[in-house]
Image 1 (cartoon, rainbow, N blue to C red):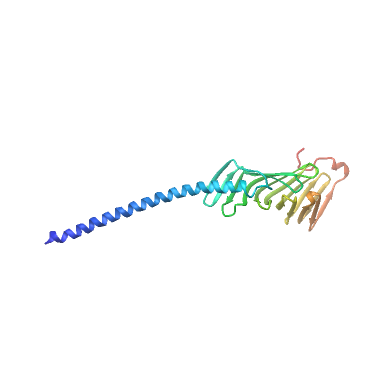
Image 2: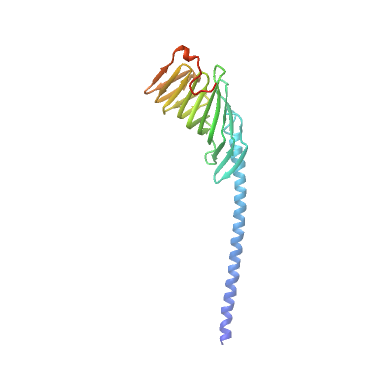
Length: 228
């Protein structure tokens, strides 16, 4: 009788082991499919986002866009040495470069930049060089928000230092709601805020404006702290 009683138990155990093996096999297959899906999705993200950034929002107004290396971190695309070129309304070119860039697939027209190095050709043919630790470039609006050691140089005319600045590349306008410190050949200007417009021909200093002008003979000397 005991032998007959054990037969259902043995069958049940065997059935349980078989079911467990089947569940394990299904789980393994699901994991494999998930891994393949992640790889495919990552590749599509890189191709899709970079392709979209390069061919849609940057054209035709903002011009070419290039990077040296691209990677994927979740929904973010990381870029080494991104570079954007474009033209202002009057046809004068501008060039924006950075050591690194990060673009979220959910906001493809925005790129977070590190170590920004930009150049803008002015009306008189001179070049204004703009640098900052960080920048947020909007390819659709052709604007950039700069932050951290912002410096705008159009030597020998001026050397401006700011904490933050908003630039519109199309119009050539610049606005900073933080203190400005400007070095010139003939003196210095400090203020709480500064606005630049009319393609750089108009500069307005706002709040606690202080100027220090040097004699004409001192004006011929290089700006203090400025390399020849």
